[in-house]
Length: 472
Image 1: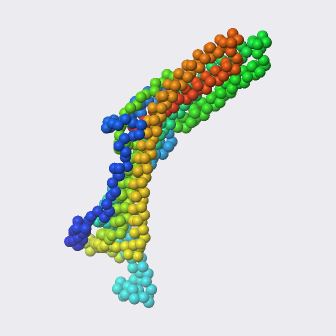
Image 2: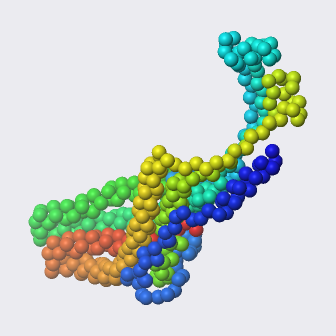
Image 3: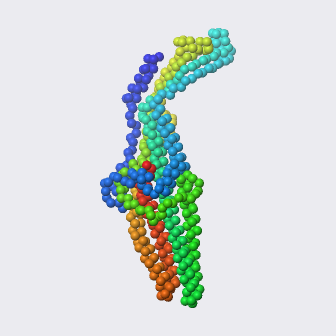
């Protein structure tokens, strides 16, 4: 029996060696998917990027670091992604056993009671003088499929790509969470600054109203002046509960991101005290495939699609399968383990070619090819989106800085205008409307300045995320 097994295994190895070949050619990641440089970026071959910086070093505010730490550790979406990685790892580990023969142990017992008028029944009665026959078997069975067309190899490649892809999905999720936490915190600081502006403006309006009332008592203005001044004061007062509402909502949103129930968030720094960084190291577009998790995930999806094409193509060709079975067998329990008389063994090997179901198998192959072509387009689209996001962030960083310069000058001018208007009004050289208009303009400009500062900080964070920073 050993000689027969050796011949069959040798034959299988010979067949595998002779006809094993790559039945499908993999499609490489398209190199022309990347531009030479980002729009709004100076032409440079420098490959260094702020995305290489760990988020704990990119953000310097300890409150943000504390919030992000909590989000990375407790965010439920990230924990779900971690479980997906664990599942993908199990699948990849399982795929490694594709080339290993399947071996099963078995113990069987059966009894048969043929009819007395049947051929078997008559022979059984004459042979052993019994009306039934028992059969007892114990042994091991083996089944092995030769990986002639690379089907099992492609299954491993696909499982490995799926495992890596699940890890990239988690990285992409973390980059978004890091960016969202920082954006939420900067928004919170902006709302704090605007709340303080509204309160100071309310005091200024109150002071102006008192002066107008004195003017009214002196007969220098009408009741209309008092009413308009009161309306202006109420406008500033109405902003306060609105901003307090937005602060609470933003704190609640940060609580969800950090995996906690709604509560207040600690702020140990003011918006005006944060320095806007000048991030000039952005690298080159082709590096996005190694830095941006979503682009890398799209590349891995193409690799998985390549593997699936190989699997479905291999299904079109003959399958070589070897089976073997051996153990002990007897129709009497007393002789069950009588060695070597009870020993038995069978070995079989054969090629199986799809015939009637060939159309279905070919359809699956055609679908896999179309899915691979779709994966190429998805990769190109992911690169387009990534490059566009980087370019958007770059122009925002540049133009918001210019806007801040103009707004600072505008606020400075309006602050001086209010001083002049109040002085002229007290001396009867200006109308009360000029004072109220100057105050309204200052309030709006100061609120805009706080918002532009927040947008600058957010634009820097968005540039960091767009380049692939935040998952390290």
